[in-house]
Length: 218
Image (cartoon, rainbow, N blue to C red):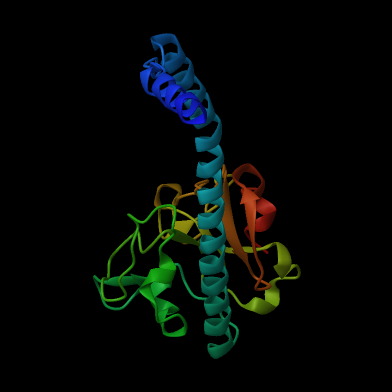
């Protein structure tokens, strides 16, 4: 009897119908909802990632500006505290920019390139170039002596720019230049520019704040 009962149980199990597997997938509406959620998340996160990348580029640029500013001061120390000119004629027709004059203290072309605008490159071997890298020099400092500046902490030496020579854009240009030969600081970093100052520190500034004339001359 026990064997028959066991056989009956096995026969019942073997004759049982298997459960039907669900073949249902995502509906079209569900897929559209998922796509919409992904799009919303992307629109929120992409600007955050973009700002983070620009922040990193700003920090790298600030290091470049700091190094170039220090090179300007080292140049001045070697030339009786006389600051370099914005440009300098090496003969009757050829000239070099401030970037060439301080190159012996930098010795790296890449320092002159802002990470946020790699189209503006510098080559120490190229002369007569009005765009030597991504930074411009305060041409109010043209051959001036360090000793005449009573507040060097507020005087801009160089900053983000698309042209080798800069001014603040107000009042009159430096006496050795005309207004058309200048650029103002380029706000390529979150509406501001990195600037090096005459006391050797470097800092990010909003473009309208750094163009105050008090930052540009004695």
